[in-house]
Image 1 (cartoon, rainbow, N blue to C red):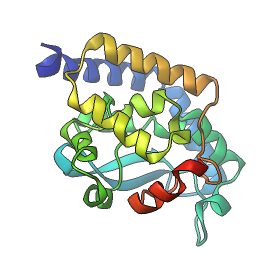
Image 2: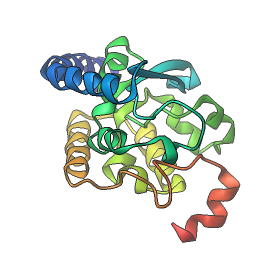
Image 3: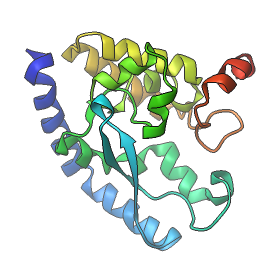
Length: 204
């Protein structure tokens, strides 16, 4: 029952509650983006959803405008937004739209789908989520190979309410402890390149 319709009901109720409860915080954060970084306040990017169908992911903008790598454009305010995950709150709208779930693999760029092995591509069977097993294991500090393996493990198993609640609780713990905000040597997470990942996995 949970897999067929319960998970979607849980998503709608949970996202609506969180959006209403977090509206004051989201409003203050949006004002902070406007004052610190200017317009646009929202960052929109195409990501791969369920079955690889692309959708527009919503986030609060955290990077200053202009050329240069992310690390050079990520100021103190942007780092705080990302560390607190407040920049992800607009994705509750994606959940209400049915493009995302509260729990599932994080949505990645559409170009990545062609780089997945068949085992890794299993992650595309389900809606992407605000948090998943990889985030519960350490957010961006989790190397790509393990991250994708955890995503595929979740997508390949029948979801359970107790399991989703446990993942949400673990993600909250990781967030409160400030773990895994960035991958070593990167502003957030490096781009996924399968061959490179294999060569440098032992260095991460």
